[in-house]
Image (cartoon, rainbow, N blue to C red; front, side, top):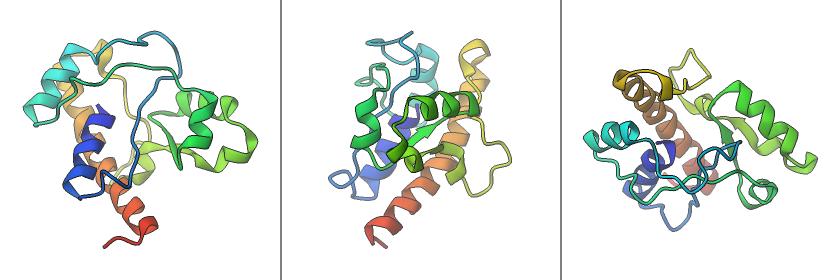
Length: 143
């Protein structure tokens, strides 16, 4: 969901040609699969299109290929830090660090809950996504 939300934020800001976006899991459970149907429904109600997204597993090349590698929670942050080559450790951060009003740094996994869990996660993703976009605009020298 975070990739779909952030793609739209970046496109709306006119920065799609300057910011590369991708998402990956730390495990191979859903490689090649589309997002959960409940994620599709929740995102669709807010106008986000997840239909082109497919699961993939994070790889060592991601650390050299991206300026930031963001984890959704502390557990995945630890896994990413173990996989990350030392020279790229500064790139690995928590996604929710970019939310301006967050108390929780972990985005909960809504998979085992009801539909309202996907809505709460989307709220968190939208807040952090706006903050991440502001951060990247600043790095790119964009207003």
